[in-house]
Image 1 (cartoon, rainbow, N blue to C red):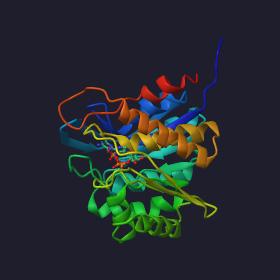
Image 2: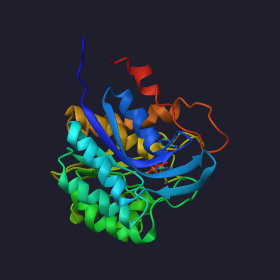
Image 3: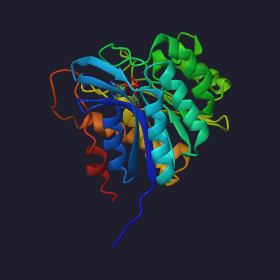
Image 4: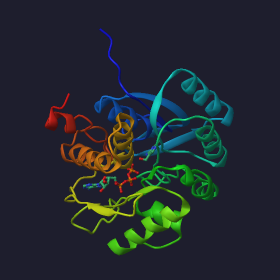
Length: 272
Ligand SMILES: Nc1ncnc2c1ncn2[C@@H]1O[C@H](COP(=O)(O)OP(=O)(O)OP(=O)(O)O)[C@@H](O)[C@H]1O
Ligand SMILES: Cc1ncc(CO)c(N)n1
């Protein structure tokens, strides 16, 4: 007996340590019972302690992967993660314009938890000017939102302002993630939807260093839901619950910022 699953695409960098990047995307999308395809943009030699090396792939290799996927699969939603440099961002933008890959979630990844750059300084403007206008949803963390808008974010009111500024750039829906507000007892994210409505995603701040790949996991879960046709607001709420469970029910891997438990949400909900 054959079964059909919706198909989603992760356009991202590889984390050899398995906790973030494309690996977090694959694990998350799989857990939501969506079939995951990939366009690899860069390879990192990485573990829970940091990024030891990074190798961006050529624009030609990125083009070839998009062409292969688009020629054969039926992608219903896609997301971007680590994009490395101007050449890679430009190639990804060219392909997103060429093929219909469904709603696009842009996680504008810039710096890994340990401080290693995952996007060059020069490419920030390319992401802002060429990629964000294509985004159905963007999910910046606080430093990323500051870089993209040029504003400083100290308060929850600043988060709401930054979301508006991103909509002015052309992003339809925005989540400003509050994970980096370290002295706040909660880890709250601000959501601004296309119709102008907004809400907060609230959760207690979990006291853990195992937060490697939180942002990737959130945006991948939302992408999987969008591939199923889940409405945006509900997809976002499922994403938040998924990442919260994955942080809460920690697992022991490595010696630094450990990865999340991608099984936790399904273990709690027994949906499938
Ligand atoms: N300690 C924590 N407790 C609870 N929720 C958290 C914690 N840290 C992050 N989160 C949540 O995880 C999600 C991702 O936010 P975060 O700001 O960490 O993203 P990020 O910096 O892009 O992550 P990464 O770069 O590691 O992928 C958000 O929903 C945020 O609220
Ligand atoms: C490859 C890669 N993508 C994204 C992140 C951010 O979590 C990371 N650490 N590594």
